[in-house]
Each structure stands twice: as structure tokens, then as C-alpha cells.
Length: 282
Ligand SMILES: C[S@@+](CC[C@H](N)C(=O)[O-])C[C@H]1O[C@@H](n2cnc3c(N)ncnc32)[C@H](O)[C@@H]1O
Image (tube, rainbow, N blue to C red; front, top):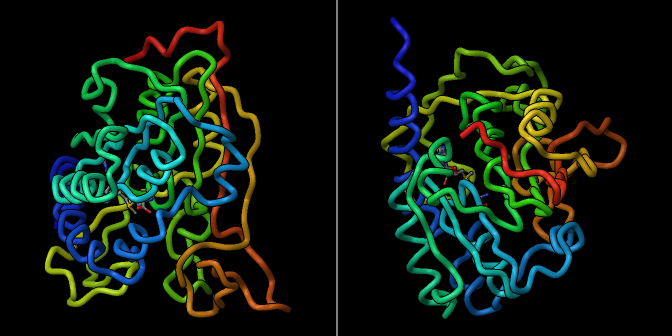
């Protein structure tokens, strides 16, 4: 069978995410009602990384249903969330209204590769990306080009995502299944499951994913004008990605004691020196 075009692959991913957005809204995993009632804020580790964001313009790329985005509005940032799923953006706007945060939050429906254009060539004090983002993108360099143009001089970029080594493993987390490095060919999969509890299987089951080695990601960010401040690999994640992970409390899953540990997620902070203009590449 011949390979689908890139546009067809991205359209399949969008249909899958549109459907997931509806299921995720009602899931225990996202717990939107609890999030609203408890007025949840960003994770401690994120606050440690970014400090006081009150009054800062913060952009969340691939924001999904906007909970991570709106958590930053709760602590005073003026936030913009961007995602290519109309259903996810509609959900995010509705949650912003219900949380009383609509005056501090804007949600834009666009492909991340068109973010600069969609955001009117504006720049942000903080660009933020949270778990499950890079694997949906065919080129990490084209993504970094967008990021590089969106961080204002003196601004920062924070990423916490799944680790490419973990993406290389099979569902059991025991054998290598995918190449660690970026490949032109995507990893195609048909699955009715999502990472949250769901009331029914997905009907839009086909997805296409791409892995990106850490060196490729970091080098792309540097190439597009950012300076790496730190990079950390974590032996934990936030969902039971492999059957041998055990919950550690606070929504964290890690290898049980005595088992060899491998990196499951990574985080990094980068900055744009204040004397450099944004990447003119876009
Ligand atoms: C795993 S979710 C992000 C979840 C988010 N970190 C959270 O915890 O809510 C991945 C998101 O990426 C979005 N996405 C995938 N490919 C995209 C693209 N090319 N442009 C913009 N958004 C994209 C999907 O619509 C989905 O909402």
C-alpha cells in the first residue's frame, strides 16, 4: 500500500484528536470538574522552572483542552493556547468561561507549523509545551523555527514532554519497536484506545507519529536562536505508559524499586538573549 500524503497523515491525526477531546473532557484523567472546583494551578516543578509569571504573556503550543494553559492564567499570566483540533479549542474556551478566566485567556485553532502566522507575528515572554506534543510533528526543525520566532527577546521556552527513548519501546515497554531518531516515515498505528479512561473506543483509530532524538530537538532550538539553560531526563511519567510502572502518588508513575530505571519524560528550559531579534526564518 502506498504511503498517505503528509496532509492526509495530519488530517487523520486531527480527526483522532477531535474525537479524543470529547472523551477527555469527561474523563477521570483530566477531571475537569475537580480542576474547576479546586482551582488547580501549574505543577510545582513548572512553577520552580518558570517562577512568577504574573503579568507575563504565555503561549501554550498544542494546548489540547486548555487545562495546563489555564492553570498559568490562574497564577496571573495572560495566556494564549494554540491547537489544531477545533473540538479541543472549543472545549478550552468553554472551560475558560466556566473558570472565570476568559479575560486572561485566548484560544486559537491552528496548526503549530502555522503558529507565527496565526498569532499575527506576535511574541511571548514564555512559550510553553506540555506532555505528548513532539511525537505528533513530522519535523522538529520546522517546529523549532516557529518556537524561535515566538519567544520574545529576553523570553523563555519551557518543554516537558515524553522521552524519545520511551517512545522507542513497544507497548509492554520491553523491546525496541521504533527508531529513536527522526525518520521521514511516520509510525502508523490503529488503536481505539487513548491514554485516559474513555467511555467508548475511538472510531478515528489511525494515527501517525514521529520520534525525535534529544540531540535533534536541542540542536534545532539552538539553530533557531534559543540558548539552552538546562535539560533534565526523568524516570517518571504521568500515566501508566507501560504495564510495569507503578503509581508513586500525585499522578506520577515510575519503575518499582529494584527495577532498572530508564528515562520516561524530559524537561528543558531555553531562553532568547535579550539582544537578539526573533528568528527571521518565518
Ligand atoms: C497529548 S495532547 C497534549 C496534551 C496536553 N499536554 C495536556 O496535558 O492537556 C497533544 C495535542 O497536540 C495537538 N496537535 C497534534 N498535532 C498538532 C499540530 N500539527 N498542530 C497543532 N496541534 C497539534 C492535538 O490536537 C492534541 O490536542
